[in-house]
Image 1 (cartoon, rainbow over the protein chains, first blue to last red):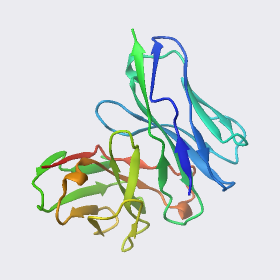
Image 2: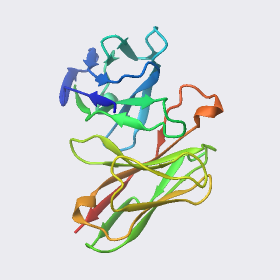
Image 3: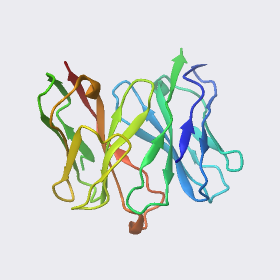
Image 4: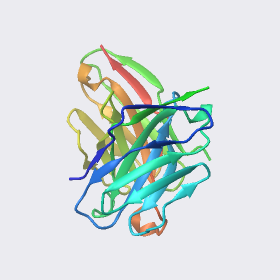
Length: 117
Length: 117
């Protein structure tokens, strides 16, 4: 079974600065997807960014980018020019492609990000 | 296009009572999921449905039943609520593997907060 580890329960960053959230995972599969979800105080789970394991190029979405290291099984999220609206819980998630239909997400325990004005 | 909707938003139950959590999606997705979120534990899969008419157990199915009423709707039932089922429940949906949409993220509803006394 796959596991996802987020070793930083809490992080803080000054507004306009850059912060990196860590995520490692354990799997024996060669093809899979990785995601970062954001959960603000409203509790809504919002997709931030996604990465396909077969792609070597790191995904980027505006101020959000990832550092995907497949051999190290590492998938960190970098937030540039942090804004107050980035304050939230961030969850790393792994999606297996081995079972048709059950493409469930395995989540890490989350990192709470605080933005300091 | 409302995405994934859930009702109710909040519910208080007494131990032993039953209730059904409703979920509907209007994105024509084949796969639907129920997760629970507990403090410090991320999200854990309760049940999933790969397509209309099929359901399967996830990581924590005990005490729950589900019904995939049609392609749009996927309900979660607690037959005899217990305090251990106090949690936030999320419904999610995603395109199926065969749809060709890549990468196939899951899209979440706003959650139902359940308190069992």
